[in-house]
Image (tube, rainbow, N blue to C red; front, side, top):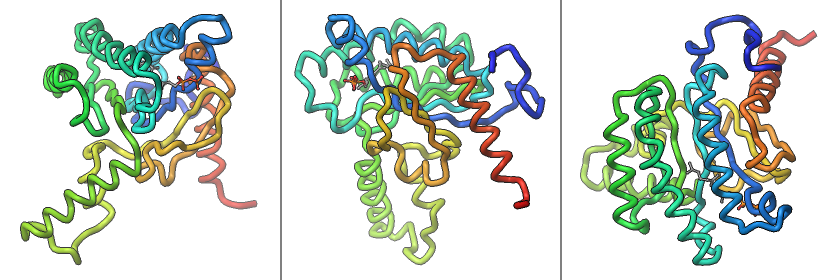
Length: 247
Ligand code: FPP
């Protein structure tokens, strides 16, 4: 489907509240295929992420949650880890005015404590600067792992019980959701993973319980908003089939 065609079922894409989560995989292979350093792939990947954020309103994506650095990624070389961390900082500084102008609310999920305090301060700054935006909700997962998030949420729930502010018998799914890093965000409808890997890799384990998954061999630096438009069409077809009465 081309982006400028009307979405199936009609409706204004800006009114759509679709939550798409993306595992942006394949930057390293993309660079290696060209004989370039892995960080060149990550830089290209960051450009692709920016293009996708910009395309969200016309794609009908209200919530976009992207996996930029996992709790497992610390095992990469120091050069790559530091390169990625500095890329995140530069991205925030360089994109801040565009993000604000386009009505993007930016948030970060994951454990911030081990990150450079300067980077943590940048996260807080852009989160505050964009807190009132509502056109696109961009959430970036950095030092994020689904199990780690559930562990931290559990600790926070137990502390509330110990403090006497939470009755264990009153704990529901919603209580748990409210203690996750994603508190306030709807659950993802669709999870897309690039580069041909067909694993969930510890991404949004709690939140994606009912999500549709699409896996594509395209490497992240080759991913375009047009490809995403096609996936959203596939998602909507699956959704319609799911809702249809059995023959
Ligand atoms: C996975 O590819 C990608 C990452 C670990 C980093 C993702 C980061 C970006 C796309 C850029 C930063 C984004 C923002 C928002 C600033 P890989 O390195 O695992 O590739 P490989 O599997 O081919 O080795």
